Image (cartoon, rainbow, N blue to C red; front, side, top):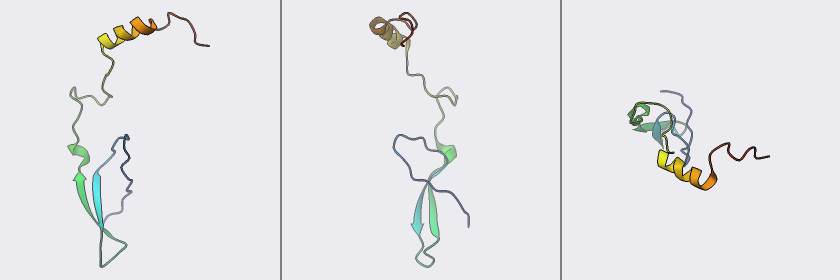
Length: 79
């Protein structure tokens, strides 16, 4: 028997910890049988082994951005 904090999964939010399913027991309705669906250690790591978010802005993306909006700092302050 263990005590735990369970939170619902939310779309777009990162998964922290394990993903479980719970089934209420018929003989003791305040207890649940828990099954681990996804172990915290089973999630794949980043391809480069880092814990940082993926880089999504490639050099060609930045060149296109600069062509449309200009280089950062070239137009002066916004306010």
